[in-house]
Image 1 (cartoon, rainbow, N blue to C red):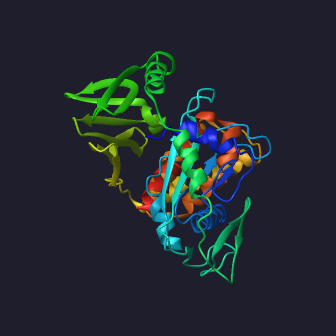
Image 2 (image 1 turned 135 degrees about the vertical axis):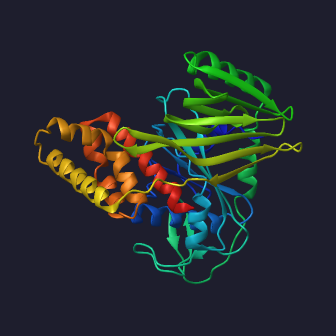
Image 3 (image 1 turned 30 degrees about the vertical axis):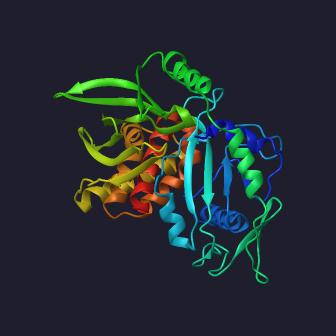
Length: 378
């Protein structure tokens, strides 16, 4: 069982990017250019490593290897993106790795890429890359290749040694559990459970009961053996169920206009543990968004645009507009889910603006965009 935090440290110890790993300050797959560059690197790493895993480490400064961290990213459907744009797509997994010195909510992203042994190529045009393009790694650069295409096994032994040096042990596991419960989440209700005598899973959050059902908010769930965060949210509420074989999370999202707020089930994630030291994570979108009259939503959409325009021009908001700003991420989300697709562009364009104006609204905006991403990938 690999401790992913140790693996990241071992990868960074190579200092420079190479033909089996890449490092990024961040990735931005919510817009076309960022999505295209991400797919290019996945394609190149898969083709350059036909018999071993390759990796992208996210949240690291390129020049000095300083670990900066990125926001928790919980999109389990990233495989769908790769399948949609690549022929012979590799298996891909994005994991959120806890590092002790990072601020709460920040992690290091680890993208693991496993080739299927066949040449991977772009299936269709995206940004400035054409369908049919094939990429390989040449040192630290992902380059297109149009002739003499051949998959070569040159990194398998090196990567195997790196992964072997990142194997977990009892001391790391015990230290991880104690740190999770006593240090990182001393102010929250914390639990742990051991599955199949091998996997230790910890979770923490504010706990409450509604009609015999327990719910958690400000939730952090981590698979301690691998130092992988399975779930993190400062806003949403979830319910948790588990038995000796599996651990299930049902995430809810609060939506509504004005005071008419309601919790809607968003996604169910089930982690199933096996006796052979492996686990499987399955997710299912169960979201049925609320529907509203188009006339009402047109009014809200226009009001939101007017608020953003005032902020861009440094014009003071009145009390009504301040309330509109507070609910802007959620109302834009409702507009998007009811067919106002331009809402997403307005939300993306407002990110940098709201980050400097209101941190709480900015956090809500990121959560709303996360929900849109989940809906789109499904």
